[in-house]
Amino acid sequence: MVEEVPKIVVEPPGPKAKKLLERDSAVISPSYVRFYPLVVDRARGSVIVDVDGNKYVDLNSGLAVMNVGHNHPKVMEAVKKQLERFVHYSNTDFYYDTSVMLAEKLVQIVPGEKRKKVYFGNSGTEAVEASLKLARWYTKRQYIIAFIGGFHGRTFGSLSLTSSKPVQRAGFSPLLPCVIHVPYPNPYRNPFGTKDPEEVSQRCLAYIEDYVFNKFVPPEEVAAIVFEPIQGEGGYVVPPDSFFPGLRKLADQHGILLISDEVQAGMGRTGKWWAIEHFGIVPDIITSAKALGGGFPLGAMISTEEIMSWPGGSHASTFGGNPVSCAASLATISVIEEEGLLERASKLGNEIMKRLKEMMERHPLIGDVRGKGLMIGVELVKNRRTGEPAKKEASEVMLRSWKSGVAMITAGVSSLRIAPPLNIPEEYVWKALDIIEEKIGQVEREKGISN
Ligand SMILES: Cc1ncc(COP(=O)(O)O)c(C=O)c1O
Image 1 (cartoon, rainbow, N blue to C red):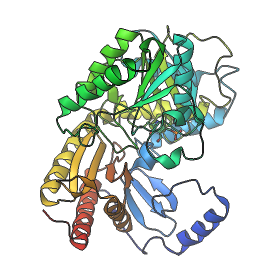
Image 2 (tube, rainbow, N blue to C red; image 1 turned 90 degrees about the horizontal axis):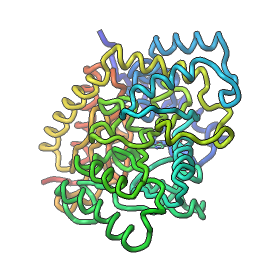
Image 3 (tube, rainbow, N blue to C red; image 1 turned 90 degrees about the vertical axis):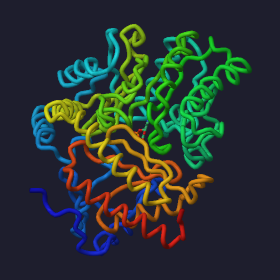
């Protein structure tokens, strides 16, 4: 029996939440973007309870972090055990077993036959920074290619790759030199005016060759191409099947490294450990964070032993590979294996996609449904023919869903992102989708959006 969720006892934000919001705005940096005023008191599994006692279905897993749900007993147990042993002893200066055990596990579950090594940091942006430094160090080349719409973090190196929203870069330049942005193969929205996935894929590959390599960037000076295998913040965008094999070929021709940023898409979210596995290629470097630490801060960069051969002192971080985070990570990986959550993410993801596509037939506000496993985007448009993004409408659907007990957020300009814990009870999913459909219908009627 699953408990009754969602359950709204006082219209959110309730009185206790409002008090906290006031205190927050007095002392917390205004640079954070809050999707809506949800003030979390506690969370278990796929349920969040706010300070006023409202219960929500968590459709975003705390920003794609809680892949095995909140406070999974096995993860909590592993954390408690590690807390009793010790909390910190700088892994960049000394040794302990939890980081070694985790690295041994990670090298087993990343694709590719070559021997691998792991660098540990604390976050996604640090994993990306590490990958940029390693790529430059190994290739002795300067240029990096990244994709428009990509999000890779907010510290200077990774921010130089990020190209998701202008506000993220405004006022911070000059950023890293020698970073070139190229179009991402977005089958629904691209600069080439086509919706044919194969054509999008070929045009994006040709752009790199014809407009970048043949016009202004000597390919022998390019260290790496960094990409999200499925764009996250950019709108949960899934590239056509042929794109990454084509990119691998192009990179190999010129000795360029491929860096798959799996900070959001990795750790089983898409039904495979790493999203790049859906496309059948092996990248040279994988970056991971978010769900990696099972809710604790942890980032990792995984590469081959040959590439990760930089000398002692070249890169490190005091807290990187914190033993409590590593223990939580190991337990999270075990839970994913023991509970068969990769298979579950694929199966449930397919059923949700089917349901959303049926919803799309009834609702003209839905322009596109796409995803892999439990990383699903629903792009809202004002008009299917013109594809004009329904930005305000997407926010409105998100906000109203939250007020009815569904914690879901948006991505890109006007997409709803569905990314629940991989072990979410099905009952919650169907209830949440009913609520979302009701809100979509309301917004359509109010805004006069019809076929
Ligand atoms: C693909 C990707 N890379 C990097 C990052 C940055 O991670 P963090 O916020 O942990 O620095 C994010 C965060 O959303 C991300 O989605």
